[in-house]
Length: 363
Image (cartoon, rainbow, N blue to C red; front, side, top):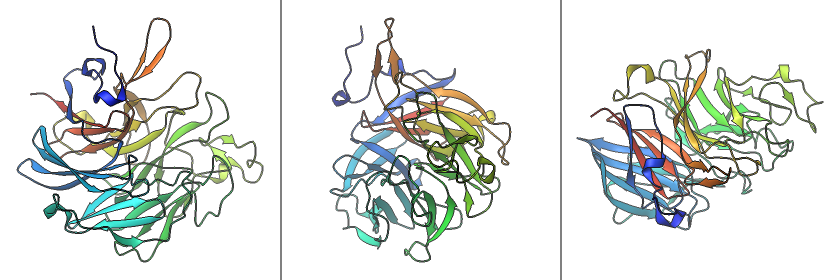
């Protein structure tokens, strides 16, 4: 008999989590309360640091990794405003904090005595609604920073909100890369052509089954993906849809499901998993908050080519949402981000349990 699980107890019963044959999931660490965004630091010989953002007490973590173990977890900063996003470059850890991007310089050598945050940019909006930000450095060396809509549904300034921006590492030359993006909390670049792909959360209050969250691909800088006029590529918004037709916008590559809260995503570039997984996308579905029957609470795999054709979705890790014989639902965890490790394993952050899982294959 498995004991009743609570978030304070750390990782959920691992036997409840289901994966395809040949895969194994284990807890790397359960010492990261509110774990959200993941970023890979310097690694050599299987040893290095994974950086973790959170929404718990404004903390940022540095997790020392030695193969399949995490012997030490360091608190690198605290008291920041929703520091969900982390990105590592040239020895500095960049952290999102709603209206600011800050950097912890020379952080890898100062895990036990972290440096104070240095402000890189303080020019982002102050609204907390969709104010937390996943951030990442692109293959062009620029830092990409999304700015969510400051509402469920509204028509904000398209140059300031509901977009994805990029800037140089010193905070200069900010420009908009994609518009009409309600709230993306995960993106990555295709390994073959370097195009930007991102997840986007659909609006609320249109019922259980509409609209779908989206997986999108940016073919040209400045493209518009529909918000607030059109959702999921073909659903005009009841408040704003009369202003512009859905045909005016870039449709999604894939519909991920209504209210699944698709967050972190990564292309799989490792060699540990079978060859069929190469360049597939893994997406962490954080799970619904206002649906009569819950959806999400899993990690999905999307097989798709570089041009965004033939997208096929399958469940990769499931079991964080349990439903008993009477239909009662119990949530054991909420996946928030994924990260491909140098050895080819896949990490998954869980902000409900405060856990980072490690998924491996074979061996």
